Image 1 (cartoon, rainbow, N blue to C red):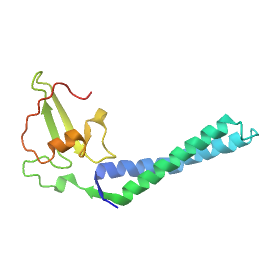
Image 2: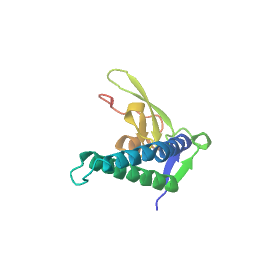
Image 3: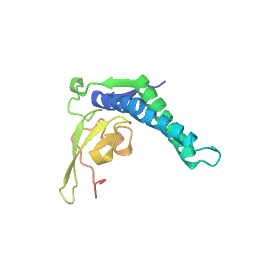
Image 4: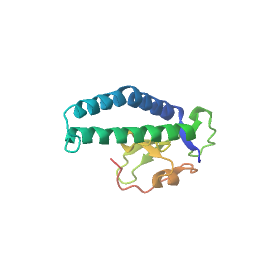
Length: 145
């Protein structure tokens, strides 16, 4: 089982999501299944099948989060010495050389990555390109979003 790096913030978000799924979503789906069952024949009961599908997706996500938490290698980015190099948890400014537009990204773990929030997975192509580099210039024609 390979450890997966994650920031303290990312781990807290996962724990909150897990709590929400277990304590709020799971009971809601159980109620929906019970209500759909009360409507009769389960073979042709679309509400029942939809609720069961939701339950399967929810349980799959719960297993996935538990697995991620179990494999988490929590990294306190405040304690990392980067010696001027881009490392996991670094915040990086990228400048479009044509338009001079600047975007700021943070290098994070898989479950934290979200391009809309400018969080880049360290194993993504851009993340791999940035890790270990010092002041660099990438020829960027446009940004992601």
